[in-house]
Length: 495
RNA sequence: GCCGCCUUAGCUCAGUUGGUUAGAGCGCCGGUUUGUGGAACCGGAGGUCCUUGGUUCGAGACCAAGAGGCGGUACCA
Image 1: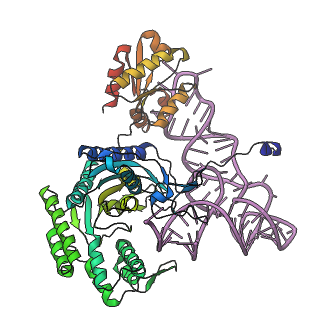
Image 2: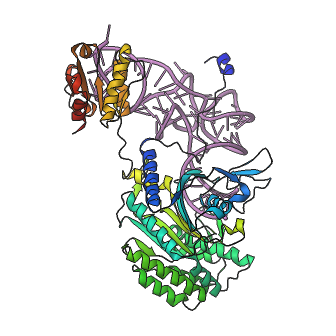
Image 3: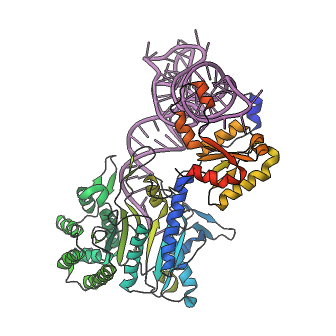
């Protein structure tokens, strides 16, 4: 490597941006299968497909406004030619609120729609956490009816089933934010700025129950917690008695939905707001029960709160009860693969009038990664049969052969390179092709085709140690008349 | 953002108290075998030892700063 050469060419390093993922093969097929399964279910229930742009004006996305100092905190934002700030959407809900507000008069309400596509968050990436990921959302806008919430819950369960999970392999948890509001009001957390801040800490602390355990959450509710790395997190500053009450509430879940509701009623039943909430939850329970969803996959769970601030009523979460390991053999604990709830305030930001809404969202990337590693989705990733291109002037006939295979639903391709036969065999092997079609001069002159079974070939090779025998072994291939092409390939592919 | 650990070939990693020309396995390429991938044997290519500065006669190794990666934690409208 001469100095002159080094100076001549600048080469950028081939590397992908942090927190962004290349997706291909089995994993991408899993994602697509998941998106399709969810979309089909939403569509069958009468939800309208809706696609909104990746960019929105930043002020439309939320109360977030990019400031000069850190325009990209949380979201990816750019300043347009006209000095207006654009930001990549960070979920599908905010664009929906914008769409509904903008087209309010023309929409049949309640308006029900589903959306699938990537969303972006400019946050620190971690395992199973990316800066770009796909969400599939279904939302119902324009009704306060708990029936709409019940429908969301059942849709979530149906999607879980739709991707092949049995009812003991997934769980849908239900809770209601209003119950926590009542509880905290009882404990003296006021509706002031300071109180709302405190409430936020409480909600986020409860959200961490599964990760930190009750002891950790207890610290976060009280004075604060120091983690293993020595970092200190400020607590909510509740009294010991108040902490006990909050924890008692999170423990009030039972296996049986009715028992959970009566336990909550005993704890909070005197309040008017709690009565409203329990009424709604009872109606949800009736509908879910009538539809036949049994107690082992749909629960009321008071410890589920969801981290986001905008929920105003029932909240839901979908969990997978399976353990998987990643490429490096480490256990993948994904926890929830989807969540949602009622948010009655979002559209009001635009319209000034309250437009109640409820929705559910699946984190497709996370969900699909889990399913893919369990070989539960995308296992239809079968490599194509490769038609070798041995004689350059016979390409037309190779194309014809591949087309015949495709007509019989066999994934097939013609080798597109210019290398010799050995390289073509290596190519087919590396692709994982189940078989190759070999038609060279010999076959062509005789009006024949040869099909080699690559899987069988590699099995046979394991038993051969002698080099000469190795060369001679072509037991894994057979030759027949040209007209028998599809037949012979078919026979090779079926075990 | 805060805390900890890490960074040597495409990948996983060795590399002695600081001492000539930095290694292994796997992978890759070629050959044995010019119409046959996968086994076996033989050969080959491939390195800014993350970067910069310092200590030293001499640094992959020691020191400092920076960058990147991993993990934890926080934030996540």
